[in-house]
Length: 419
Image (cartoon, rainbow, N blue to C red):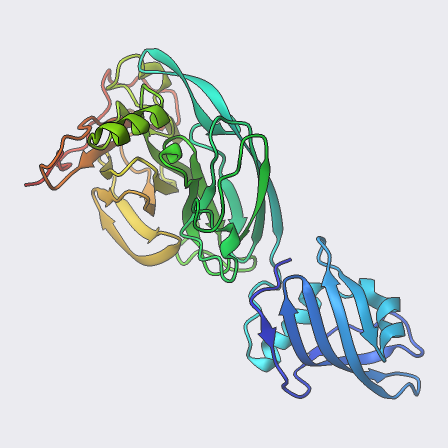
């Protein structure tokens, strides 16, 4: 249970805690909160208790701590101590927070928040792409890495164990992290690298973000293979600002290098060479059927005719803008970078490096054809060369169909650089 930001108030009879003990006699009928200060998971509340059975009214303060399950655990108190200790397990964080929000006008947006725990293991993992094998740094052995899925208002703890060959930090891209800079992740800015054989636990506070963001390594170019999506669903009890999609899918665009990225960047630094050229781009880890030895592993998204899908696109490629399209299908953009936007419909999008974009796609074309989902790089200058290859995935309708030998290719998609 997240209890930030710091809140302090002295408003008289600020809010009535809407919960009484489950028995008659000398229990309190009402508990009024006169003031509250919250730091981390410690609360200091000024309270006034209106008793039953001739108990009268008493005032004092409680110092409370919230357990992982959201129940209040008393640390110490004064004057109303006996009552608090006796009935502490009947109070939850939400029960204390809602009257304060309603009656004082202050925002307690984390009242129904949840806590999530993830384990990230940084390690070298073997992969085969482009007809060759290589080892590269990953999280939990996957490329792209695991998806963090939570609701707006939740808090996530990620324990990162470094079993790799380099010191690394992890950054939570686009997360504002109010009063929590020690978990932001930029190497040598908010922390030293997580050294080999050690671990570090991050606390990520999703206070205002909603939609799609992403996480990535923040040490040299290790983010080329150490990255993954963050899916932030609407807060509990709320909904999307558009009709609920029938399905959702994370789509991560990446860069693939045949060589070791760290060795390549070290050599470029020593020689003053240009930015490294990737050997391929990827969609959900696969280059697609325009690249050698890649046809059988091309990413395939199977859809049902008439249904609408929310695609959560993440551009995790190294410094490359992309055009993205699904042949013969319209894309309705509904959000980017962890926030919603006024929806608009287009035939293709351009997504910048490190940007996320949420789009709705309705499966309303002929189900007997496969359709390319395609990214094509964009560059508006001529100072240096860049990888001009495309990456493909396939949008396929569910059913027993005989498809043409070649999927439908997007028409009118901008090509490479625009001069």
